[in-house]
Image 1 (cartoon, one colour):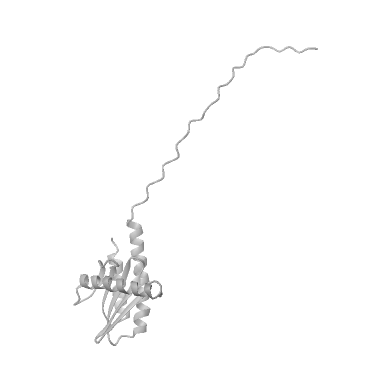
Image 2 (cartoon, rainbow, N blue to C red):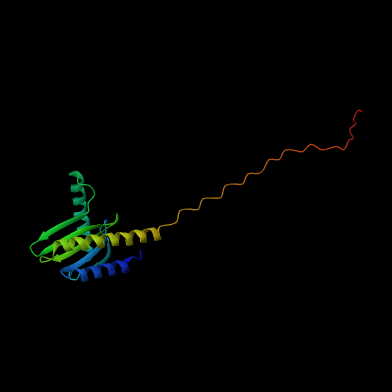
Length: 159
């Protein structure tokens, strides 16, 4: 999937808009890394943990009747881990300092998640094999009815 550079650009722009971010990761819901900007954090491990947490959060939202999961927020002593849906097949996980404005984190995280979802969705559509072309309808042979030979016999008219 050749979508990594545009997603990495999105992550860098996000970190510029929210300077208290210490890391950003885009991953598939299966736990595979798509793109990351996570200095000091091993991205494969974070992606795997995100997938595990996502599984529990999706189940919790479902069991409690809250609908489809939109985001997951974990607050630790030293900061936040926020995960946002990014389309149907990807997620955005952000690491932030404790002093981050959580409202701003959510606003920017949701917007970036939506954009990443579009990029991943476009890449999936672009790389999906095209459905086989429908065969042209078979031409049926025209059935011709035999012509009755015409004879040039004169007809007489009575007067």
